[in-house]
Length: 293
Image 1 (cartoon, helix red, strand yellow):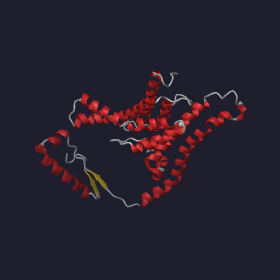
Image 2 (cartoon, helix red, strand yellow):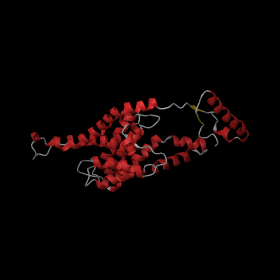
Image 3 (tube, one colour):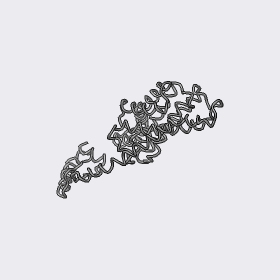
């Protein structure tokens, strides 16, 4: 293994950072491999601490976090290239460059989280500090198209019920705490016990029981809360008044919307379609976002 301060150690940190972003990005549309995100924070922990007793330098921490955010953005916001070429008529190289700049800018929360966790690591173990830093950084740092760690588990309905207690920051923390706790347990359990400590004294178990308990609590407590809370939520939903919503989509192309001769017919069609929805009993009509573009 390369030493943390060497060039190879920094490259290792960047590679693990990219792995973090890929794991989290796979949870986004259209892939929606939601469980993959659970591995992301643990990989970032390994990027920041090659072993339980060593930390990467500040440059390695910042680059690892930046790589994690860039890879997340590249997977979750890959559509931005098609958006720029289709709607802004940009050449593909220019659109790709602007997309890469967007993904780089969106990596700020992850870079900040990595640096914060690295800063407090002497006083606070990474398996605790990194989840806290991820939650805080994604709350404080701006993003144009935010994709937070907690969003990756929204299909797991019982788990995400605890969002009503602390919003996405709480979900971010719980996902990261589970991931980092599991990785820390695996890493500590695999280390040989110190020779001066008798094996039968239980020392190896004591070395990893704290992150094990944290990981178990981060998963079990939200699930328990969701199991209790979901019946009440569903009862409230069933008792709520119904609103019939109609979606209006005339399917105008970009070229159609730019043709001044077609604006009149397009406008009349947009006015006529909602009347059909209203006649069918619709209470609310939603137009396309580019109806007046």
